Image 1 (tube, rainbow, N blue to C red):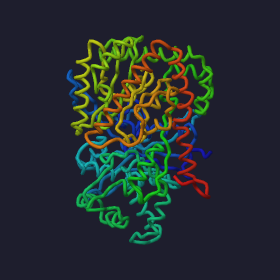
Image 2: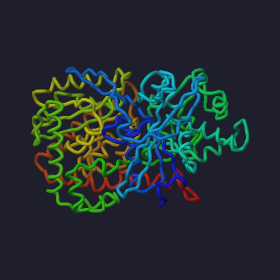
Image 3: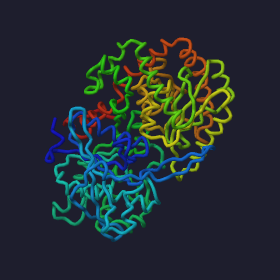
Image 4: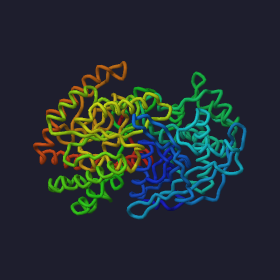
Amino acid sequence: MTNPNSKNHDLIAYFSMEIALDPGMPTYSGGLGILAGDMLRAAADLGSPMVGVTLAHRKGYFRQVLDAGGNQTEQPEQWDPAGSMELMEPVGTLEIEGREVRVRAWRYLVRGCNGHTIPVYLLDTNLPENSPWDRTLTDNLYGGDIRYRFCQETVLGIGGVRMLRMLEHATIRGFHMNEGHSALLTLALLEEELAAQGKTEAGAEEIETVRQHCIFTTHTPVPAGHDNYPWEMVKSILGTEQRKLLDATGCCHENTLNMTYLALECSRYINGVAMRHGEVSRDMYPAYPVQSITNGVHAPTWTSKPFQKLFDEYIPDWRADNQYLRYTIGIPLELIRQAHLEAKRELLAEVKKRAGAELKEDVFTVGFARRATAYKRADLLFSNPDRLREIAETAGGMQIVFGGKAHPQDARGKALIHRIFEFKNYLKDAIQVVYVENYDWRWGRMMTAGVDLWLNTPLRPNEASGTSGMKAMLNGVPNLSVLDGWWIEGHVEGKTGWAIGQGGEADEGDEGTETAQSESKDLYEKLEQIILPMYYRKPRAYAAVMRYAVSLNASFFNTQRMVLQYIDHAYFPEPGPRLLP
């Protein structure tokens, strides 16, 4: 494969508003950024010709602070890119609201298991030549009002393309937009195409040329996940020529710019992030040929040290080729149990240290950690708290570890956290519930490895993919999950975990009231009749499920397989007939 360190070859430029590059760098908010980082880590392992583009986010997303009642407040998570990456020499410019805004870039190198590196450029407007407000444009991830957000996306999309050219990454085969935040890069490409042809206005031919260079991945079927901006504001921020190019794309409807539609219209390859999500996206966007590439996780990053040691002993090549994790089926069950116990002890020690809660290693432990928002239904487990108490007391005990941040402007998400704290107090005599503060990469790695069961309860069909359960699978932790997102593909009842409900469409209404009642009933029955009795009375049978989880699921739901699919289907497709989605 082409050496990714060379500047002059066919690169794929991967644009994402957030990329999780290092546990100490708050350049991500959650699953989208973790996925982006995992993708680049896998690409580096494979020696793939890629380059990443994001923003510096000097104040991060936010640091979550929870009081005794579960009320969330936010603090900036300040960091300095100068401490961990190289400042590049070029300084670019772009027009925002008629002002010239200067942009520079910091370079972080993602290093693969064989020494290959992929550069990631973090754009930064904190230069003394800029106005005080413009200097803050690359500070806050998903912060500020819609004007701030659109200016950020202008820096990411248009500024990102220009920076790549200044850094001599001239031969770029494709521009991959990870969600619609970077869709304005299509305008920068149109500008280049017009300049190359000596034209002043874009037509169908120029748009098609740009389309042939663009790939778009959509990650959410939830309307709030797609950026919409009023046309009058867009016109006031973009330059005159860029407004004309945007007009030419025909992507502004009812005086609104939808960034997802701009990305859809200007991409030759479009995909959802699970098979089911591809179906949902085709229903949402019937005019576009949406494919599916199911997400994965970066195996070396999310495998706990005890399981890494075990895999190294029995499957030495698992890092270089994640498919070898299929051979986990030959590892003795007692060693699976022992590796998990070590990971569990690490989690419980950290819970005691940072949350002050004393959990027991011989008690069945459930983990749930997602963004705190209504449709993820973190409180479904408590729909009948008295029955949950009875199940726990009869079976032999249960303890639950929660984590997750609510967006600062999501009042319902904050209320959800508060409600879990109320259940925590109500059940404290029978079930110990811990809500860890400021859930992040470090907590995610410990929780997905250290709990005994991973719970996921989204309202169908709002789960595009979900990757936390994949991380759990790497560590032999079975899933108990609603049949949505990736779990439809990974679920083998009683082998890799258990399903909540029967799948299909959820009912409408207040977060699917009828669906919630049916699924909570099934959740309790699975815990009471199958999972807890197996855990306490048939530990070898439970360990067999753990082993199958790794062998059947972790060997497929990884970013190594995912990147290879992007290479084959989206980045460097072979000519010839393609299967219909």
